Length: 101
Image (tube, rainbow, N blue to C red):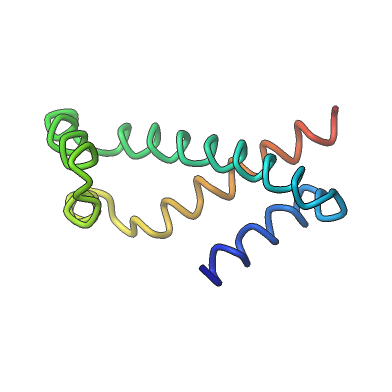
């Protein structure tokens, strides 16, 4: 939970949203979080061999997240760094879009 709060604070600060009311911040974080999650899933599926997509999906649907992570770790080197880089790139995209809005 503390790491998540720090991550949320970083996103809000990075996007210049930290002065918004808490309810607006929560809504924005939810939207941004969904986009980050979707981008991570897309990128993971591009790296994971196609033959393993059904197994990965089945594990996620069954709520077996630890086993799904183990599968990813076997096929994507430095999975944590990979996920972090995708999240960072997504935040940068949001920042660029927000700056032009």
